[in-house]
Image (tube, rainbow, N blue to C red; front, side, top):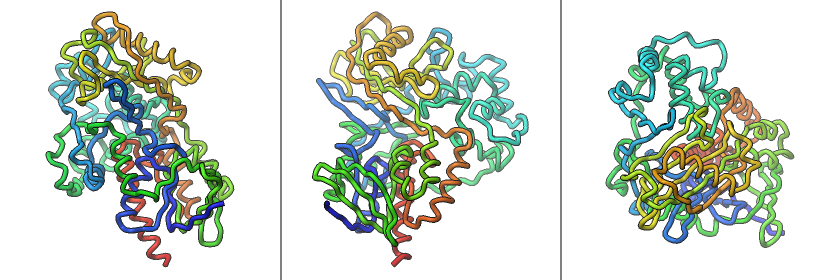
Length: 467
């Protein structure tokens, strides 16, 4: 059995773990990164075939200072691509695609909401809302109270499906939309919070990011999102171990012992600290021997089944010009697909001449039955939905990929913040054990980078004090 004794063990080579590892590596910390899969990146999954290039996890990222600086420091700033931030978004409503208004004047002119719903939303924006109840509100309850039920049905609901694959009747407003909910809690209303809340200074962005993205632009790379984790892993070198399946974590004195099954046989890592950058359902069994209560809290975080279906069509079967971000489907419109991104409209090099490419997500918390469907059935269902909503003539799709994520995105359901508080209390007994992944405080790539770098800084400080 092989043995290793780094100061820091990082479990998981998704973007959270890699972000932390990269910053620790820059400070010449002694670390080892263990990943159970054959590659780095976690849910970031780019594939290419026959001139097509597509994502099977996240499709793009919203730029943030931490993420942009990481890209620059990883040496791939020149590989960035930016989608036009003004590309239209659509919601499928009552048999047709309806433009999502992006400005207040657009909202007034839009057909997406009825006149009464617009008036109700305006009153809510101005602060004329019912007092918050003495209980935790769901996303549906919070936004219905703030802006009215039609805004929930036609905007908030589809957006929630797109970000969390979640159910507005189950997600906690204070957890899933914490910034918005906190504005009301601190200032009495959302609009008062927007006006009165102090503006935090933005961290400087590396000069290597030139030009800087404009407002609303989304990012990717020439060869897909996979470029980022690959670039980081290349700099980490031999510190990254692939196909290392962790089995158990136990405490031995002032160190943690983690056992692994690897292609070269069993391995043991004895480390001063562990950064757990894996999903809650993977962290739970690893921690069972260490702390049953902690493991049980993590195991209780739900993750719904989501399918990512990539279909390519002859260009003339789609609207011309095929220019837009994509479309969302409110529940109750007779469409099973959650949303479709027009991938080849966003970034170049995603489809060969004569074709356009789409990425659709299906399933989530509101449709768990997709877990019993075959890949062929998923692709067929998405195609049928696009035939009703997007195609301008009949066409058979080229099925590029059907990727299933049996446990996709952590759900910030009612009680999530309280659960995280209990987890923090339990972790207080285990100095040097750190959680760092998207069930904590944000699921976007920028959130993962911000959190990873913050945890890395915490570990550097802790190690210095422990010496």
